[in-house]
Length: 356
Image 1: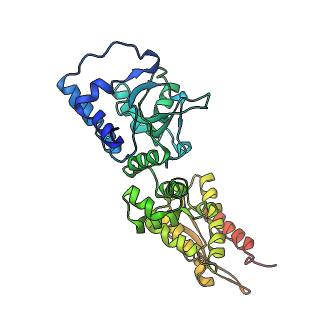
Image 2: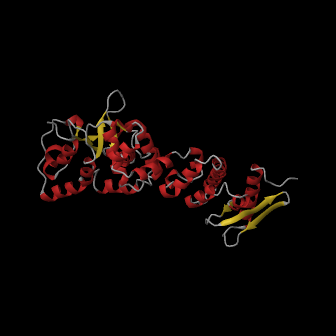
Image 3: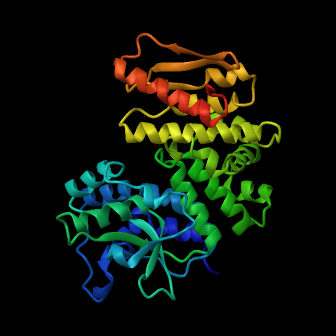
């Protein structure tokens, strides 16, 4: 009887079989002689490094015909689209700690998990778990370490098992945002579980209520998300009330309009090298967008490079516009005057500006 994938992978990752089955080798040199048995210290270190991979393996429940570990050229390895992590948003800064670790240890010590692919002339494998490792090795090969190789454990998994494996790894990653995971879950719900949320929750061993909230946040449209400085700022707990408010047809138009204004404000801040509007303030402004006219006007403000309000609109009506210039903002007079011009421009766009 074929062994369960979880048992098979766990056995291969055990201390007794690291040498026999998981010794890294270059695929082009598969006939190389067997390696020298490691010392007790080396075996202990290997067990520690592979401990997380062993935990990942236990999530899978399909069957595996072969598990191999290879040294690969990362250029021949693509990223599986079913992973939550956004590869295009990875940077040297976000991967700096991992890059330094790889350099210090003389190479990648914890293997990624990949599977073979067919029909793609440019790639031989795709990454199921280990996107940051792939990015970091690729970066190092382009920056003074051309011989650095991508260490990968090769397994055979169907898409649903691959999704669960990747999800288990991402749960432990602080740099995978709630929004990335939420949208990954929304795609998986349709692709792997036939839109049956209860079945998905059971397979992932998640609370159905928590999964429901994640799926709700995943539905927040892109034109609202642009109000945030980064998609990584969108966290489940504060974003869920926003997702609920967007379901209210009487509130959604005002929220979208406020999101458009905030998106322009975020862009202006980036271009001016000023701090972004914090996610908490964005949520507050969006949720207040459908309140009274006074509440909407109170959220119209410009912040200094120190993150404090410089100027805000107190009221706007037929009699005129009332603004408040805030003390203690740390802004210069020129910056405050520019803030006033910016607020007048926003009022004009909303049709509430001064009329000559």
